[in-house]
Figure 1 (cartoon, rainbow, N blue to C red):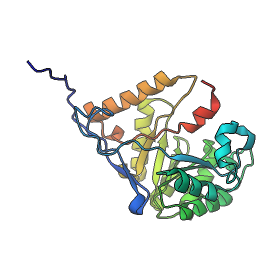
Figure 2 (figure 1 turned 90 degrees about the horizontal axis):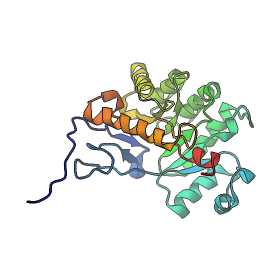
Figure 3 (figure 1 turned 30 degrees about the vertical axis):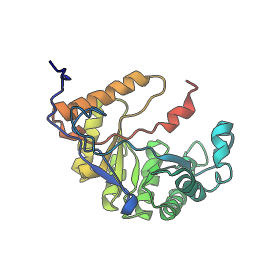
Figure 4 (figure 1 turned 60 degrees about the vertical axis):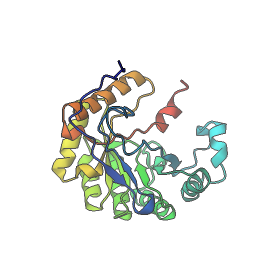
Length: 258
């Protein structure tokens, strides 16, 4: 008698979200089963990795071996992004606006928006623009970025429960995709998705960032929240969780040696 793999029955599917524009646009989501459970469903779009670019020279903040490949372009985010695409075949770029940190250089929204626009115009792959996570400053900076890069379908975030209205409205008005950020909690993630929907942002323009924690909560807890998110989306037909997940892994890598 032939062995048959026991299969999970799914009643939901992850909604597709397309980021970027033109021939290099990327579609995420669309799966009808748990990640890589291809014996149970389909996974039409594989996970993607974006290469991280800072709008300020990281210098000694980065370990030598990490900084070495980019030391010739680290002072110019446009050249840095182009090098990632041309030399390393990056499928997407994640521009982190570290210069806008109020505890650092505290660069203006206008300056950050100008940088983001230059980078967006210099590459032909999808561009993610990520703020510092400071609720007040991101609420000023990210809408300015959205306006400066209107209709380029950037991925902009993080939009949190305390600033989602300004960031979500800007993404809605200027045709971008918004990153909905919540602190490792399925219910909070769902609630933020609902709030963005009430604001008018369509599901096709939302990515969920459930938080990636290197230590503290720990990787296992982080994974379990993502698993619960997918379980609710795929087996409980929770439409507000049927959205692709995005993880900002880079910042956790820099924080801990483990």
